[in-house]
Length: 115
Length: 115
Image 1: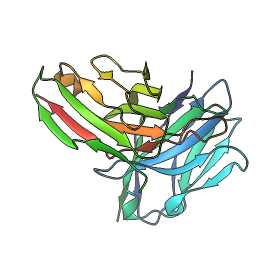
Image 2: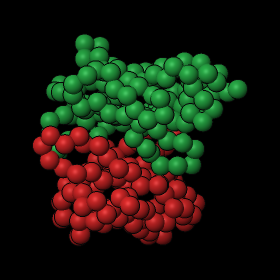
Image 3: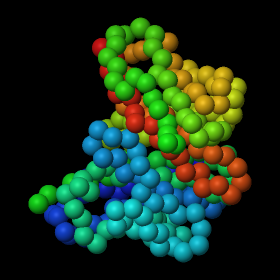
């Protein structure tokens, strides 16, 4: 069975500082990996996804993530955050190469950006 | 516009009063799913469906029912709601098939309060 661990429940950071949100997964097969963002009082929006190929994935709003198979990690990064990046971020994993796999989410990381 | 819609968006009810939350998607997706989101627990899957008349339990199915009579609709039914079902509920859908990304598209959420 697959699982996702988001190591930080909350990450406070100042505006224009870099940020990294950590995500580790476990699975016995190849995986697809996702980061979703949830702005206050809104639904979930896809930020980026890794399916195959280049391990560095670029998403919307200047975010990127790096897939590290040996460390089973998919950390999310942004070199300079804005106040508007304040949101909850969810890492999710799906077993790859199958259209029948379910999506398993981590517990989320709240990114709090202050001036 | 491709979207997943849910109704109602907000609902306050009392213990034991049956309710239904509707979910509809216009993307002709085979797969539909219901999640609940609770603070510190992330998103947990309640039920999912891979096709019409095919439904299966997720991680937290107790106290919920679903049906899939049409491809586009996947209502969530609480026959006898209890206060521990107070939560934020999301419906999601995706296409299915070998080689697809398993990316799910989410509805805007339904905030349910059971008194």
